[in-house]
Length: 67
Ligand SMILES: [Zn+2]
Image (cartoon, rainbow, N blue to C red):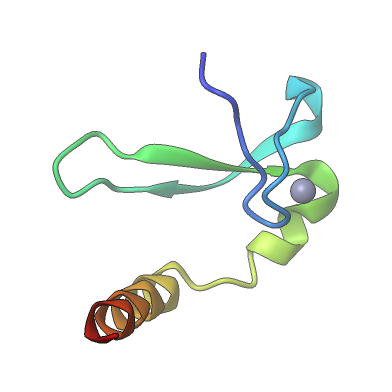
């Protein structure tokens, strides 16, 4: 079993009872994966738009490659 990491604070979720699935991301060439967060942080994660995040990651990648 892999360690679940909170999407909101990037800390590992050591207690499974303290983690919740906040989203399911589809993989480009795989089955995708569940996104977890601490119960206390689940509301913070929901503020992030997955499509917007994907666009931002693409922009960051382009900027990083241009440097
Ligand atoms: Zn957290």
